[in-house]
Length: 128
Image (cartoon, rainbow, N blue to C red; front, side, top):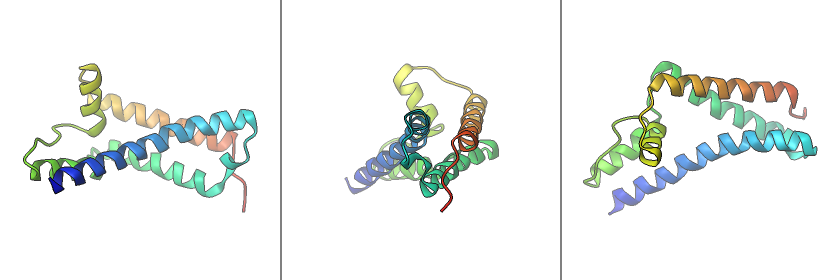
């Protein structure tokens, strides 16, 4: 029971991380148009760029996300089944029943990372 709860906690943290990366980018774009000052916060933007940089680096290096591995091991320790592919690939398959080549994810992560860097350039954070 404890391992399953810990695995669920890691799953939630993973989802929060993904939401931060995606929604953070969307809010930066909306905030640029609406002139929200907080989207230019240097710490927010640095953490956001670092988050997507980690994802892109892992994809290019062929590494499985540590959160995915951690959750998978906890699920196995709880007597369940761990992931047989990446976190995103697993849930994409669960939601739409479609398998995607891992190279597609690498390309998508890279393009998203480039879009985040472009947003950094077009909507730069404030200097302290």
